[in-house]
Image 1 (cartoon, rainbow, N blue to C red):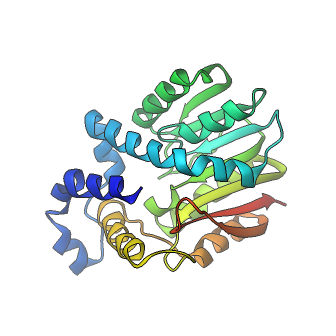
Image 2 (image 1 turned 180 degrees about the vertical axis):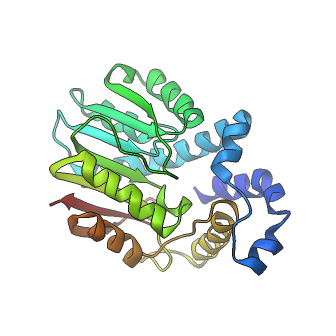
Amino acid sequence: SYALVVEFVMDILQHLWANLEETVWTGRPRGDFYAWLEEYPAQRARFHAMLARLAGALAPELRALLDPAPGVSILDVGAGHGSYAAALLEALPTAASTLLDLPGALEQAGNTLTERGVAGRARCQPWDAATAPEIEGGPYDVALVLSLLHGFTPAQNAAILRRVHDALAPGGRIAVVEQILGAEGATPSGEAFLRLFSLNLFHGQGGQVWGQEAIMGWLAAAGFGEITAYPLVAAPTDQVIMARRR
C-alpha cells in the first residue's frame, strides 16, 4: 500500500531534496531521479521491489480490463520490475512480451521474469523514455505504459505515446496507469500524498502527477481513439486510461 511508498520517500529520497528551495524559486528541476537510481544498485533494487509489491495488487484488475487474447504480443514501456509483464505471461501461456527500460531496470525485470518462469517468452530491450527513440520489433497488440508518464514533461510524454502508437498494430490497444488528483474514491490522505509525490517528481525529474485531461489529450494527439478511463479499486488514487490505435 502507500505505506511502502511513504517509507521509501522518507528514507531514500529525502537527501535529494537538499536544493528543493532552488527548484521552487526557479521553477526548474534540479536532478534526475532515474539516472540516480542507475548509479545506486541497492536503492534501485529496493525501489523496484517496492513497486513490484504494489503491482501485485493492481495486476489482476489490469488483466481483467484488458481481457487480452491468448496469443497476444505485449509491449511493456518502462517495464521496471517486470511484474506486470510477468503476470500477463503467466495468465496467457502463448503470449509474448517485449520490455523496454534503462539497462539497470531491465536487470531487475530479467530477474523477475526468470523467477516466475516466463523469461523464454520475453525480450528485454534497452530504451530511454527521456529521448523516446523509435521502438523496434512489432507490431504489437497491446502496450502497457504503467506509472511512467508522471516522470516526464508534456513534450516527452507526447513523444513517448507517439512512439507507442507507431509500434502497435492497427486496432492495437494501450493501457496507461497513472495517479490522478481528484480521482473518485481517493481519501484525503491519498490526495495529500499525491501532492507531496508530485513535488518530488518535479524536483527530481521535471515531471508531476498529471490530470486525466492532459493524458487523454496526449493520447488523442498521438493518434489514439476510443479513450476511456477506469478507476482501480486496489488503488483509489490511480486510473487505467485505455485507448485504441485508429
